Length: 210
Length: 212
Image (tube, rainbow over all chains, first blue to last red; front, side, top):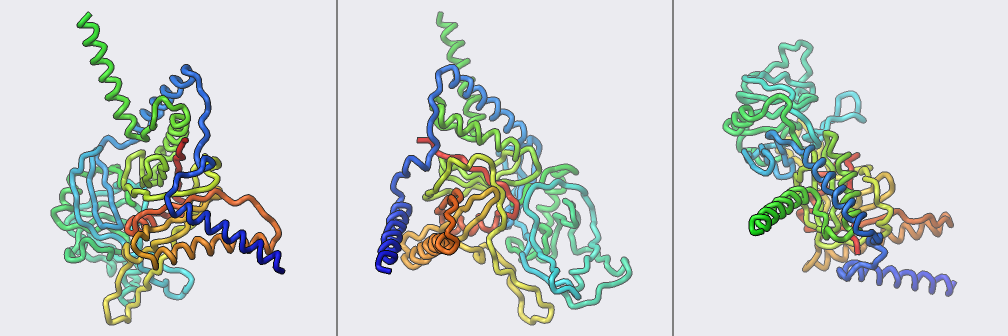
């Protein structure tokens, strides 16, 4: 028993020392780094050329036309062209809240703005909102049977840009909430910024969301 | 002769300008150092595959101490790393995919509630969390606790707890499988929350390792 306790104590002491070294910011042991390979000058030049070719290939994948960048944590939408910021707009993005689907406690809607790369799929002027099921359930209302009962005009602003699966960049009546995570996943902007985005973005314009 | 010298100088400056422009992609470090160049080339090869698809990915650069959120090779967001440590980094060659994003306490919408329900925001995100990947890799993200001994104690407790549970498993099963590669990243509190917010399930992570 004493021997076991001694072993455990020694082990814990060792772990403590490792923790201390890690948290102290001391130089790393060599085992943590990649071992250098000895390369002759010809191989080095080949490697440099390879690096240059690859760097060029990666540069060619970067968008050359304007693209939309959305920061969902800080609620900002940017239009960028290479390093130039063409527009910096305050936005509202997904609230991250959840809503249970009626009659099925295991299934729910999660109101997140999707992250990743998308593209503008549609550009609409004077859009009409086709209210989805959750919009009624959230308000404690019955889901209508008729499609006509789902239509609501004037709530999405003057323009809407669709980027798939029912997600849009659109306007809002609640401009005081810009800068906050309050939406059901769509990206809201004020009227002026929405107009600029509509003008600058075409169908196919990339949208990067993080 | 002067003309030749001038032409040579102009050519040389053009070459260095083109290098500089492309080097911004992933700085190669010392161009004369084969090891760092090999590592930068390996990372570039992997990044080209990731950037060819419509997705965002995370690039952890242990050379320049930064976590970059990228898409199509473009830097979308940068998180500075304050300290890092790791084990078995030589196995970190291929990109890893995140198995699960950090847990967050999401609020449920209740239409019968009389008061306004708060959405989740950055401040709701964890400041210390573990990211697990396939193939095997564990990244422990810690927030800087300088000047906050209570936070430091909590974090160290978490680190120790994960080590003790690993030990416990070995003692229980009697099997000592080699531990997966692991990385501990210390960032500022805000940046830890920002990273927890940004990462999504299945997101690819690419890591550039330092050379001696």
